[in-house]
Length: 311
Length: 249
Image 1 (cartoon, rainbow over the protein chains, first blue to last red):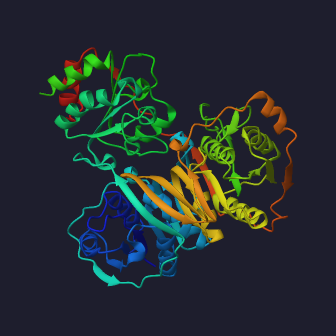
Image 2 (cartoon, rainbow over the protein chains, first blue to last red):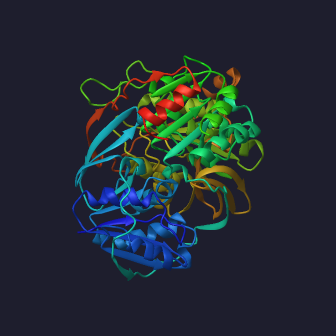
Image 3 (cartoon, chains in turn cyan, orange):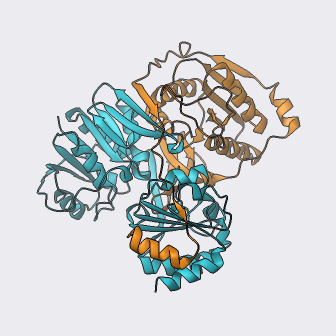
């Protein structure tokens, strides 16, 4: 039996979190199919078909899937499930929302946030904010997994030539209705896909300081901007900037933490970054324990200097 | 309107987690336990809705060992009217918990179920969604704002790129995210009063639910340690290291 990956997309583009999910699926040496369900998704379906290593796209274009409502999409996944050994989605807000609903309808215990696939039925996942890892074994079919995107490399988005098969809509449940979306507009790289991230904490003191001190450096490094929970709660930046156990999980090549003390919940979201820089005025801050390079000092002096040094 | 609030007893958020030497799990003996922070937010929201006159009765429910009564008392000290403990010493996985909660919902017929989006022990982030599916209800996960109307609820949710608003017919399941509210501390008089509030105890068998675990934990291990870093003295040194040693800029 093949494996089904549920694509996260915005109707025109496949979201980056889908690509490591496909890599995870490919470790199991089975055919990989990708479901693209949405409305006016011709472009997303073509993009999915070009992904390396995918053999078939299941394309379901219907108004019921226009806004990714969990109830409708889960119902569609349930109708497709009998043909698949494993069903995977990224452990993004999208996958976390939809997959357990589908799993319960199938009477399957989902395995969340998988970071390693040992074999067909044995998986590893973080628990307790990544302070421990659980390796578990599950029987039965299908297996439903969400995949932590930072734990697997992204598969190449081109070079593939999958066939595209149209699948029937499973219908509208009418249980929830989309009202609107307010998306944060940004020209910067997406947080979960960025090579470099600079994150600020409460020590920035205000939204204005965040903009004045963090943004110029982010511009020079072509970095995404993140934040600690404290900075988001204080209203310095929007909620989707939050890095941590229950926010975004990131693992860039370079993570610069500015004025972030390093609560367990924040570390859980970024400690797999390749290189970590911590800038904090408190030399005892826990963030220094996981930093590759630590710099103790006043961020209001250091950040302008850093901006200058980066030319 | 009657509202059901499932809560969970977990290792306190500020306790350092220690993995057992035999890799069978994490150390829970003599460790401070608390209500899961997201459950506290759900209880707080229910209490505010009751204070606003939208909700008439709040039922806190939990599943687990006899000690989980403490968590129900905490919920009642915050303002829940009564508690239900589904008592068992067995390991409970999210699907089993969702089935137990469904059975309670079938008995109690609440108009809404408000619960935390995830527990900070297993970090599954599944139970609310599974419960909605089993009940055949709509769901709004990761809520940062909830407004009840006539037979409907409008929920603003935290999503990857920002915020999304959904409208659901009641009954519905709503899971709370961090920014929904800031939970109150229970006052001493309310803690005393909570001791007298009704607390029913049931078993999974009473509810006719099979809670057999679906997966087997093979081992629990510590995360790989990061190699020790260095302190730099200046911005110049930092930039030099990032350029020439780490080669990341």
